[in-house]
Length: 223
Length: 223
Image (cartoon, rainbow over all chains, first blue to last red; front, side, top):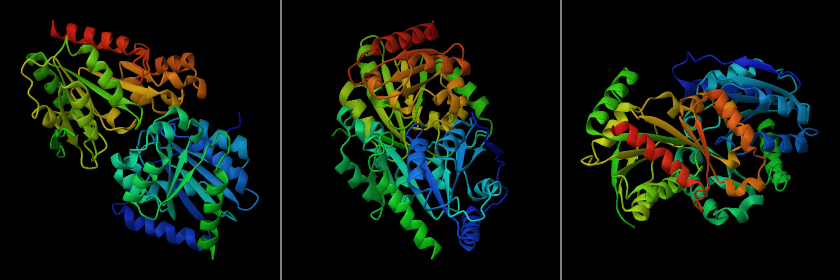
């Protein structure tokens, strides 16, 4: 397997993460780089979704990926092998989230010259990552069908900070008690403006809609 | 729907959680109460597994349940309605885990007289709950098939602190790329003594094996 760069993330020293996140967003804006923070539960299909999305967009945008994980480096390697784009692994050393300064440590290890879009795959966790602004322009999350349509009721903060909720694994809808209409309703209780995009990352169904959303976002940001 | 008691959990004041957890275990031992800490990702099927397990054991053991959740109370109500046992909801107010002192706040709201077994359903999260000893005699976790067989590689601490890993949703094995043999191998890399029990909580398949494990545990503890 290909080797990827592994960055061991250190604890932040900044006390005011919100201010630091605003500063980071300003720096990225001046460089013309759009940062997307992608969150989800463990096993929702973040990496597969990313591979399919990147392969639809890589001729239109220069993309780089930072894969945060507590310990392993399998995801960054998978992304690199399946898409050929710049991909690094961030090791959080047990930490359950990333804040702006930790995100900056990752960005410092990417070549951002000419890069349009950086996607941060956050630690698989619906609680802590939602509490820390990473400096991203937008937050996205993936909710997979087997997790259940009630998750916006149980993890309110996560759903209120996300601008788009990708509902993955819709191919297994017949085998689970998951109501897409109810799910949309619960998501909008938390954030009335959130987009809900149903996909099946494995087959690629619906991924074009997520890719279009992302392409629009980047175009607006770069204007 | 039935009303259940809701306990708003406060942040702990104790600095040394490990010591406090040992103290709590001692108190529970002297009362003859076995505490099980049940952890998992969001949507792995903790509540359904508990309902099926409790219904198999409630004639043999006096059981109570504490359902930890950030905000909602649906799980405690479900347990109470489906099993009739003592069930309370712990609201963590955004906190991503429970430690020993928070667990004690929950126990203080239960009638423990004659109770053999208390099950704590921890916050759905594979990262933070693993870091805090709750004072439980044993840790158990549920890994559901759709999450993938590689989770022990990605969340090493969670799998190393658990004595039993219940693999749920085995009815959907044909639709997912999940290898039970590989999963067992990865679990044992983290904890060579961990039991792995495949079940389908929805149909009840395999739940008797988990119930037997738990009954044995409680019998040994009460000797």
